[in-house]
Image (cartoon, rainbow, N blue to C red; front, side, top):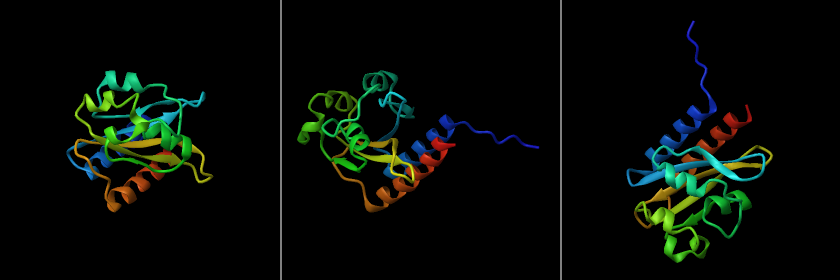
Length: 151
């Protein structure tokens, strides 16, 4: 008999890589999860460096900060086509821009009861919004992440 036990970290990493593939080669995905204290922690971010993840570790959900913190606070999808044109990034824009990213968007990961568990954040190296297909695909991946997180 084959043991197919897979942990949540492996599932989240798989889902992040699937979202990166859908978004294209000039993107990176970060799945952030709310901890028991209500702070955002890294769940899976296959292409982001450790120092970046350390810098954003422990962000508090806030509708006026970045895309992931805003999505976690509001429970809504948040779009930031340009970090320089969005005041929500005034204190943090130096972090993603130092990696060559110019914009991002974030989708909350929610339970069926609309409780936010975390976020799917996608960073872009070109100024743009995600396509409708990317949004729909990420909705499915966020649903799968919610199922994995609730198990």
